[in-house]
Image 1 (tube, rainbow, N blue to C red):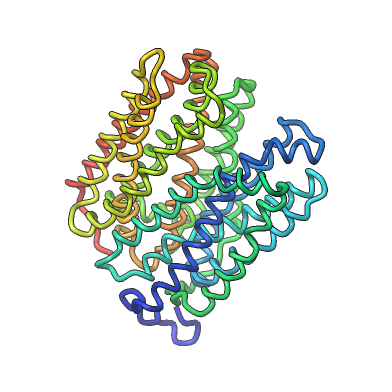
Image 2 (tube, rainbow, N blue to C red):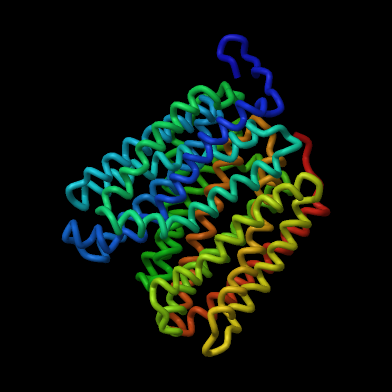
Length: 461
């Protein structure tokens, strides 16, 4: 919204084709960098621990601090984007991510690396919180499904190629190069984005700083509580953390009850299609978290496969997601997201059951085709569901919807990972089978909620 006239600037239905291609290059480059950084950091942990003379237990914080920074700030940064413009949040987030990447490459100790990784997580939150909103404004409405499908394709490709890229870089250089490689791509994306990204509507209300602190603290406590419960932490500590989460959540809801654009978007959750779509997304990513945490342990500890073989077995899931997501995205421009998403989750659930019923000594083919079934279902679900979330929110609330897309993904993955850890704690090596069965249950629940969208009454925008 213009500060002088008090009116929204005209919102065109997407960018012209030539400018659209350059804008997408900028947005998808940053998205790929953010997704790649999660994958490559996992591969680099042993090398980092050895070079910085630290323990495996301590070096895992290189991954954790990045995730915490993202979880804590996604919704507040998305809310800020509705006020100052999504393109500004994207550019400043990408700038911070690029500078922090230089800090990671120059880190001389674990504490210095952790500080740089925290800043990098803040920058990634800036990019990912508004990414989906920018895609909505870059593509014309008739091509939104295709746009969100391409968005999912970029993420899937980054996760698929991440370990291979990391291994290739480590074969010829040291771990700092994993972070230094972000710098030229980040600079190029910033320069392109400055020229091509669309101006988005701006709200006139002030940023709610106390609300932002409450939101960040509530989400961090929630994630910490889930993780603590799964790792046999003191019951009293878990109860205290979860009570603290509820108290902070209640204070946040009370503070923002009359806010025109609440940071935790309770106004959007009053829209049945939006609420069902977010809940379905959390279920789907919980399935992914359960599978991606439990299967490597199953492959290596039960089947006695090597790390290289495990990486090969995990690849079909992400690879097929990358194939199916654009196809499902195009179909969602013509068919209901509730139907496509529900069918995708049914296929995902079937795939999880098939993995849980693997024979005692499965062949490579036995594993690969089952993983491909899961990837097919997950990829067929993602794009239509993303479109449903964004299209069920009014354009002025695209930032909140976009932030919730990323937050829902992290909450689902974290919940799935924690449940997988709980299954291993209760059942030992057999925990992988139980985790896959729980994942099938989440897929079934998500499918039911997706199909309910076919009868839900959408609210007027």
